[in-house]
Amino acid sequence: MADDRIPVLFDTDIGSDIDDAVALSYLLNQPRCEIVGITCVSGEVNLRARCASAICRAVDRDDIPIHCGSEPSLLRGVRQPKCQQAEALDRWSHRTDFAPATAVDFMRKAIRERPGEITLLSVGPMTNIGLLFATDPEIPSLLKDYVVMAGKFVMDGAPGALSEWNVNCDPEAAAIAYERAPVGMRSVGLDVTMRCQMAADAVRQRFSAAGGALAPTLDFAEVWFRHAQVITFHDPLAATTVFESDLCEWARGQVRVELQGQHTGAVTVFGRSGEGPHQCAVNVDPQRLFDHYFATVGG
Image (cartoon, rainbow, N blue to C red):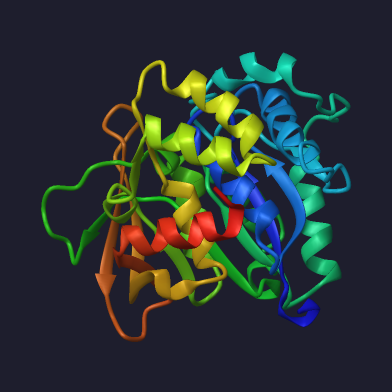
């Protein structure tokens, strides 16, 4: 029903890892999702916007605003210079008229026009989010929710931390995002998403059967499959929890980003606390995720 729809701002580095496109295909097919806009981040950001446009256009959704954000990180330059999947763009109709660096202003205006309504879903380096929260400190309090795919969480300071791509591409922005995020911010980290993998042959079969938004997504996936034979549903898991939060088990606490320098990466540490401002996914049933995903998109 219309009153069940959730307005979503989708911030993405689509065009590198294929899971961003898989997540966007889900959002386009989710009847409870109102995509307020798509904002792109990281190197070759104009090409990333074009990739998003190709997927939207495949389902006649040129009405969705798409904006280019920041290419360099806050302090460490461009950490992800190439949009590899753009090589498949010539096979798909898409927009090309994207102005530079409009994403943060677009997000600010959209959130301020609808206070308390919009869920921010970010699945890439958190540069746009860090800039948004730093330049307009009231914005986090105006969100309905903030869901992020980021981090590999060290629980309660346990050893064995590893950096995660989205955080490591812009650790300073990630630190700002966690420090200023609204209470209840939900993080889906690598330690959980890595349990949700699908082999290339199964992806080809199911995406081909579904068609629609997954048709260009599968074309982009063939670029990805040159160096990987699985898709890990990092970003789709985060996206699905906007609508079905019980797909994950959550723990409450405090996330801290430990900045360790450009070459050693940044570590996300999660301290459990019933009064903490953040929620982290701690478990997932992969089969339930896949069942829900394909029930939504087809195939």
